[in-house]
Image (cartoon, rainbow, N blue to C red):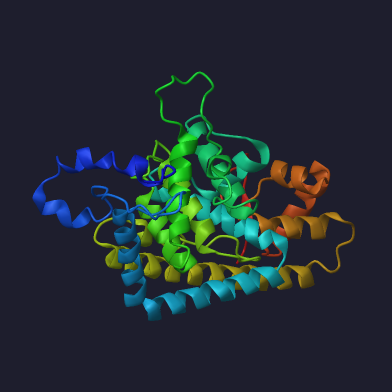
Length: 355
């Protein structure tokens, strides 16, 4: 018999021990657990291949995709429209949506970090006395990964910024190996639509041993990038805008995929409506600011398009203008009804476009 290279089910097999402790009433939700490995025929070529249980898992998702074909086509169409809109729009739109999506994901996982706090952290590395800097760093990572750069399927460890420590014991399991196992399983489902593959990968994340304290945002961001496929404008699929119902677990693949598609449909519509609003505001602000001279007004308008909320120090850093010029233009824009101050305070003020 020819020797087979290690397959992606090596780690998954360990889940069987846990499965024995689960009550029989929950067996219907254990569709993802691997079964025993059958004897292999002698004529197989060497190299990785899908194990029987993995084939069953992927087949279950194939069936789920077939059952939701019409809904999948509708959601894929909405994502395609969003991709086209972002390709034709200013670069700042993608960053704006990435920041809003990351903030909504933080609410889904319980960190509840608003867009204003995310903006201050990303632009100036400022945090409040009671802010969790670890959670802020996690949301900042999400914004960077959602805004662009290499996707997760080339090098998942690099995408997640997670590396194995150098002083690991000889028997310790490497994170890189677990990441490769997950990538191998995803590669075996390459015939599925990217949206379906993203949903499958999201729900198999913990089983692959990739979970840790911040894995909810990590796996959602990873799935969002995979779902976008080869999109050039929308490099991520919105999952959490307008609610994150599609990210909730429970049920067989057909139920999970249906819930996923409903959540994506809502999120894509929310993103498109937000772009409608900011595009209309940009045209209105451009017309109103025509009498103003200098480079600060258009630069400030571009910053307000890219960021959902800004402070005077943020605007100063992002535009390169003086503090006096920034404050003078912000005051003028507020008087004209183009922007709205959100804090009601005399200090540490934040403004947003009046859309």
